Length: 79
Image 1 (cartoon, rainbow, N blue to C red):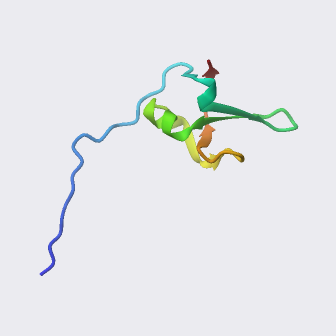
Image 2: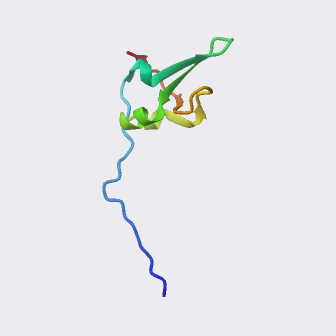
């Protein structure tokens, strides 16, 4: 007879609400501009998750030169 295991997550984190414009270190972010002037911002995936930006991160759009960075859909301040 096969046994089954049920797992329940008790401390599951809810997405944090982002208030204001987050400050992101220059090393953890990248700016990409096309020839028409459209700007896309990218943030390092692990840093963004660790700092509560996951709700604004688009993991489907990766930076063309560095796949450790994904698009962030909100305005950021680079410090």
